[in-house]
Length: 321
Image 1: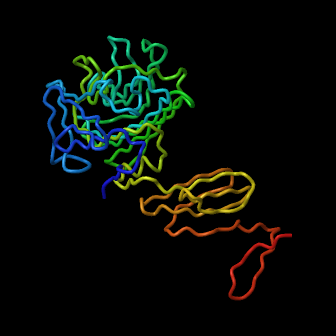
Image 2: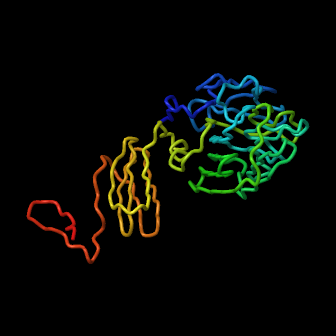
Image 3: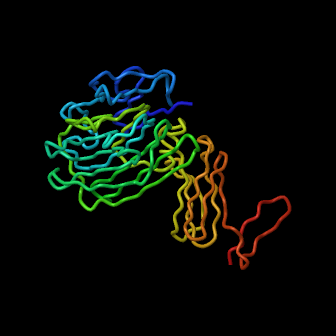
């Protein structure tokens, strides 16, 4: 299977690294620095992965002024929402290796730095006038010689939230980190850089493989992140949502979602078997289960005080009274 981002308007850049640094969704093509190469043997998506060597000062970049309108954290961005997903396989431990960054130390232009400090994934969020920043240590290790899928979602203005989700391919384990920004994310005109930072030093270069990096100007759900990692993403995603508002009914709305509203005991069955996983959301005593399509109407789990009609050959319904 392969991800399909073609219909998703939230996708502002897609780097598949198919023997090039082109943007497969828009015009945000990267320019290589050093001697970026491509590995056709060890990769996660498509035919190639980008191979960056610290010793050769390899990285890729695009100037802020050249970014497409709507690119997240482009100078002038008032929304300040960004999600970045990518595969990486580190090859050596570096002090402050940049993975995806919009960050310039010397120019006091600090917006966002997704970095690997030795083995640990860290996120730096700039604020105030770009001269200050908040450091988030996720505590998640990215070991040399292993493939990981990394997703970072940030709302830098309204919710001031940070969510990180990392999948370790060697044992199929998932690690999460959540944080809160103390200040609104600052947006400046530093370059977007993959594999280093703007104006990098010798300890800022990433050494290893990168594959399928996709950039959104909106936050992603866990379902979307996991579908991207599984190579099963297509917009829009089918999702199960659970809300407690008092009405005991499950239905499919115009957006194609199966929604469940309940107060008390309720079992809801939602449908997204095409991505091969079950999503469980619990709100008190309420649980949603992912099962095979098509959607079907469901009713409350019987309460000892509820009477149910029972006519031969007919479906059971609760007797209201």
